[in-house]
Length: 196
Image (cartoon, rainbow, N blue to C red):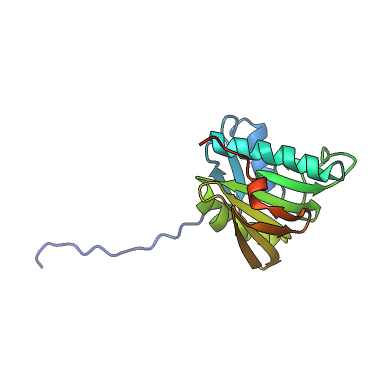
């Protein structure tokens, strides 16, 4: 024997704890998440990106535009939770919801209440596509827009199937997009005018 020791590898099984929406709410009520801007997606708590001026201005513009175009037929929800299932409660930038007398004071909207979700993406583009979009598809959200502020284009996703969408159309700033709720709209009219 040469006195050396043989170290055997041991595999350690690690599993993530996936939080339920109920547990997530209890953490919020207990003050655990007080100052954090977070959302629950697939049982994981994600930090939300800081909101910069182009992002917040675009959301404000959409709120004004959609209220003007859609009137009182629908509820326009801005950065509020949508309960997709027992493990996911994201906060999309804009959601167009079916009208409900209680304005969703009794419960957060469910997938069947959502007519359109809009994510305004700048620093969050990768997360919106890789993490949120598959969850929206699994929940059966019929139409999702990802507005890419940097590229000034809109990706429209329709016909959810499993964790993806069968149809994806990309519209550039100088094009007209076809939408379920708004009909044909010039993309340049969906984005706010910016001082350059």
